[in-house]
Length: 446
Image (cartoon, rainbow, N blue to C red; front, side, top):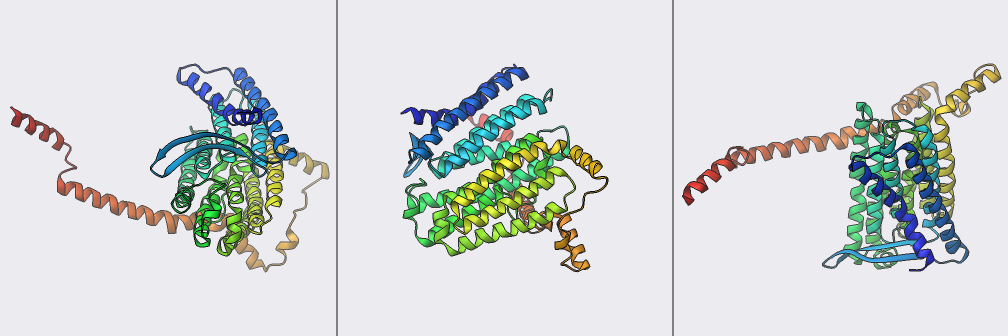
């Protein structure tokens, strides 16, 4: 292992090691002071930024990629789970963005969450999230990408429910968790299909081994996973619910890293997307519908964080369109620029209303609204309908509840009823049956 490979391993592992150390201290009954947590976080991300800078110099200035193989985690028959870290010109911008913005969020959160009861819990999840993101962006195969993807998902849900004393954050976190799990089936089945058809899920060997029809199926499955993680239509309803978490976690998840993970997944399979007309059309249609939906719903939002969330949604929709059009590097530049700007906007959101009131006082009244020239193009009744549609956020939650969740709930109730009938008929449901069987067996032996 050379110097640059060692730096790659260090950059990925450092947040995971800090998470493990802090978690063990917490489980042992010792809660470190805020100052210690702040210093260890600052040191971790400062050294990681230096390591990423060296990796970036090697990757961009000298060309090529950096890869580290640790063999297989496990093997089952023909299936093997390779542990390979890799940074190339596609993953490097996401890798560097994660380290830099996570360090910024860590510095901001030290003051923002000062004396908060869940201070240690927040930083545990921040380090775990960073570790999962870096693992996903530096994975050398879709197998390892799934592991990082799942870590990002669970930390996202736990941070939405951060203020667990109130019921609303927990309820919204469970809603987000349900949508994540439903859409992540696409990623899991897609990786399974790669192994079944190509014999591997490595970035290097998978694409040439698939037929056009197989590539289309894999792309559609991965589009489902990407749309769920990036809150694309019709799964956009969970995004405003995610604003229940602390502002720093909203910034890093839904302004910067997590919401762009779906775009990274599609960028990884962009060669396959380009070969499939159906996949290309669906990616463009999904992004375009989301951009329109995000623009309209954001204009009707009543709070700053939700408005910023829908602004993020709009930009990620445009990124999906760029990926579908084949503008790979424009999409990468768009992601990095948008993530940086949106993170700063989220961090400024708590003080934005104060600044808005000062601006109103300075101009001597209300500031004129924007976009009215576009609204004037529609008839009054159409404007009213569009406003109601936007205020209810496109009725997406209602549609999912009525046509997806309720049928599955009824189906689950039917299966539960049939199961209870079956147990009753066979006597399995009788709580005293095991005791009676044991007594009977003892009497026979005697």
